[in-house]
Length: 411
View 1 (tube, rainbow, N blue to C red):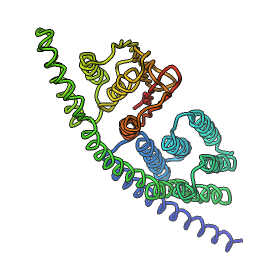
View 2: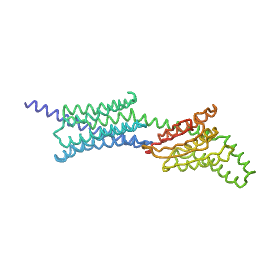
View 3: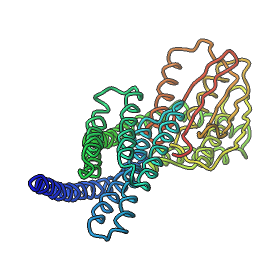
View 4: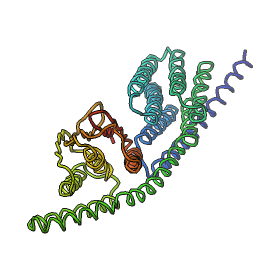
């Protein structure tokens, strides 16, 4: 009996020091990750969720450490707070992964899985308050990370793409199983630090590399856009028409030259300035282009505007090329089209910008026209994706063409 008691005492003492060691190691890992992630130059939404996860785990580890140095009454309160903190780590990881997978039409996934995780967190808190349900507490904790694992496989990504999460989830799952076998072996905080470490090296760093690659690609697109947007024919035609205008209406020449100068100035400012500009600035550039287009020897057209939303930003030269296509290759190539409509509105968390013309639509175009339009729209599409996770859709019908831009409102 005495030997068994001594053996159990020795095991308990070893577990005590092992627990203390892994807590300190976990705090060190979480603190280092916090410092490194804060230094990132690109703080996207998903990086914010990763920071929340680090802070939650770090707070839980600190509270777990405090349990060892407080009296009996405070120890119970510290235990409850520790479990609540650890229970919030799974929802944070869930939000982090869902943000990386956020696409149109998948919003229900985010709400569904996050609600399940928060419900499980509430159960963990409830079982922590009623300390006699320790076994159930560990089962629910285990369930949180099994659900997270199931969520990863439901995402449809390849194993290689989620390997950081999958390997990292082994640690909290193993820690919960060990705690069910031996309640004194409390390694959950350390296991969550290892999950953070796995996700950081095998997932978060890859996303940061993607951001750098996107910036390099964006720089190349900016140069391509600069070359594309300098249309010699448009400049020559504008100057020629202004010269003709000097014989027909001398008073209109000065405003036309000022408008032409302002158009060129804004174009170069947009190409070499900020990555995102207010919609009102882009609209001013569009208005200048429309005024110039209306003095050229082309058929008459009207422009309607229904701008329900104007307080947002977008990449420069996003709307103007679409209006240019509508004028030149929409109504400009049709004997019937004479109207362009520009509208903005909010729809299901997105800012929507639509440009519609009642021109040729699906009717045949010259190959050079198709090539120009595809280059221009593809450039707009790429910059929307890189700069604000936006998208461009072109719909051609019998009664004209509609170009629709959708920008996530949170961006």
